Image 1 (tube, rainbow, N blue to C red):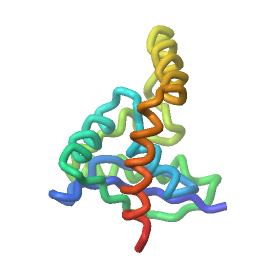
Image 2: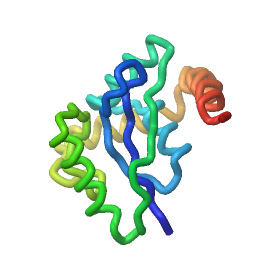
Image 3: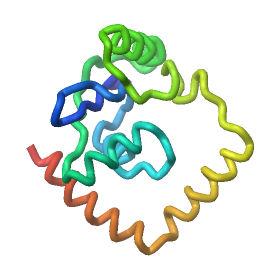
Image 4: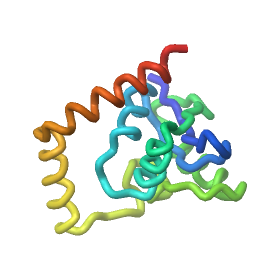
Length: 139
């Protein structure tokens, strides 16, 4: 199986703001756009959404499944070395390498994750995002 290493860029400046990996680009993009956890990348994406914009997702590498950790770390390091101010919380490689949540934070994340799927407003927001995503992926 192959894995995509991708970037998310600001559509107004073309500056790379995030580096990640996925085996399903469409689903991963949705995850970024609909993220409810307090993260720097979420705040950046929310600022774009308030302007009616979405980040630009670009594949920068396609690697084998057993090599993605190395290549994600490599690309995060390389893109930072090029001077981009990425919003990644960690050095990459497993989604949490270098970052550990406190027990209190884990409880908060769990609470909001459960609430997110039961909140009536979530369904309304999801339908708005679905329209944006369908436009984005209709090329």
